[in-house]
Image (cartoon, one colour):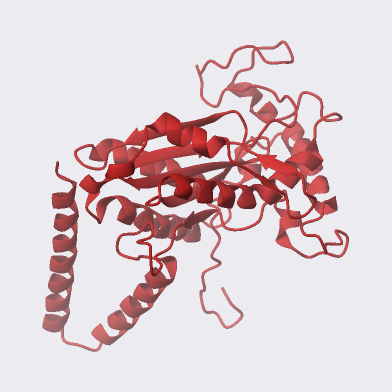
Length: 331
């Protein structure tokens, strides 16, 4: 709300900050994600869910996220339950944990993904991506990518996962080698004839968009102590070659070293289709909302009969679009 009394969007993606804006953000990206799966000739492509993680920076407590889940004995010799949520992701020994290494890895993870993306396109030129970055409980970024490759060149999931996980880069700030962790996964899924599983994959990826490291950590004193040390490490690191940490105002120092967007999708270019078969972007969605609001305002001045006709025509267009998408998805 502005001083003039006009309601405006805060544009937060975090549900705990603003449920309304977070849901709008999720809905926009959900539409883009679905467009890259259902709005094209799905029989011509193969789809994957690729998960890549950060390397280890020290041992952390192993705490289950749901009641009854088995995580085994923790390094502290205890077997934790969900009641120990404030220990989830917390180092066994904060004094020896590599906080500087973790925030530096977050800083350079975007460069690492760029090298990974280029490597995959060297192997499979038709690759397109929809990428979601999630905060792990320990404060490191975790990458999930929906991947689409032409069926004529599509590899086995294991080969795609290995090619991505073994990619590496050198930091542009300090020259350090940046690589993915050993934990990773790649699964193939179908978009034709397997709609329920496809929707589950899309929902799983998009649910990560609304999380932040603080709310996901359990909020206990020990989790806060861990995140405080991460914040201190991020404030003292260099975010670029020219950075003077004490004077730098980059948000990288406020986000545990992370930079860039939480969600992204490959864009349409002169030579590439991009992730969305229809070229949908958030900019276009915002424009469509503005046009819808203007049409509503204009409709308020029309007669009731004219408004009924407009609603029926809009419903018919929407039904036709959904029917086309379903017909494409039928094997």
